[in-house]
Image (tube, rainbow, N blue to C red; front, side, top):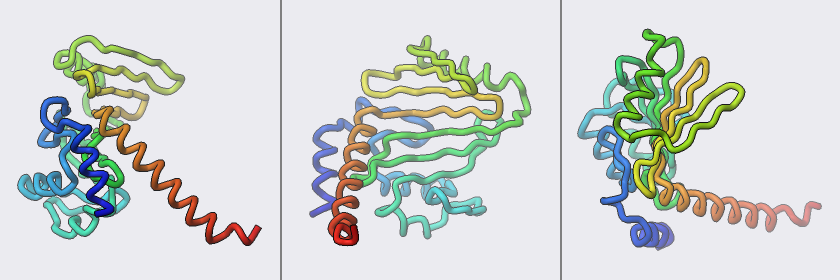
Amino acid sequence: MNRLGPALIFLFLFPVSADAFQFDAWKSGMSAREAMAVAQDKDIPIVKDGIIFVNTHFDQKVMKYVDTAHEFNYQADLLGEHAKVNLIFTPESKFLSTIKIQWGAPFKDRAFQTKLFQLLTGKYGNYAKRERQIFFETSTWAIDKTNRVSMRTSGNSILVEYLDMIADEQGQKESKKRQDENWRQSKDKDASKF
């Protein structure tokens, strides 16, 4: 029942169908188990983030992490370049909230950044916001009222991030609740030491 509560609240607050972003076969709001089923069906060599794995096919062993991990990734060739795709799920309810696609340098085609920017602009229209920092530049497009996509470029990498703002907010609440619980347990255990 402990894991069911956040999932039911999330389903009530988050309409999974209409206001969801989609990248490839991944749709925001899908559960981690649904994502693993997609990975298995499409033979995507997905792994728990932090695990180095060189398999080129789906490995059933990843299923042992589906209830405990909230970030998974895989390597892919996208637009003719090698990329890492991260799927980030809410920590407790395990719904897809963010997808990050990262390309590292060197790019075969130095105009790759421009082409990718044009691709996103062609699909989502003019960017809603552009920020320039010392080492990188970020352009952000609104997909709809609750979803956005951004592209951050630097001298040696490109990061495209799809973000479901409702799912991300839920994930932040779940993370804070987990941190507060961890603090409370640590304090109860260690307070007498001080």
